[in-house]
Image (cartoon, rainbow, N blue to C red):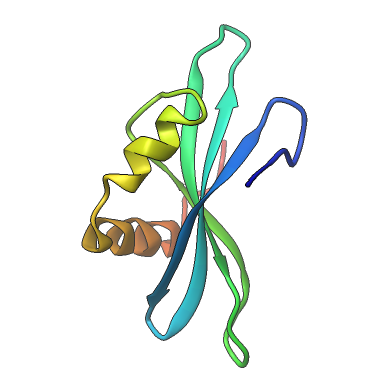
Length: 96
């Protein structure tokens, strides 16, 4: 089931994975810019007791509308999803 967290942003559930002992719900976020180009990201919503919880996200290289972005994400293997999860956890430089 897709959710719409804010106007224009669509989040579609990709599935669940266990990584580093944590259960994560994986979602595909699609958001259009003013020119109509879609920008996609994977969201990892962590849900473990005794471990940090919350949502981390990382952008992906494709720019696809909802539905098609979900299909593209479904093509990712487990190892690719884990790599993207670890990339989402990395500290980011300050936004300037």
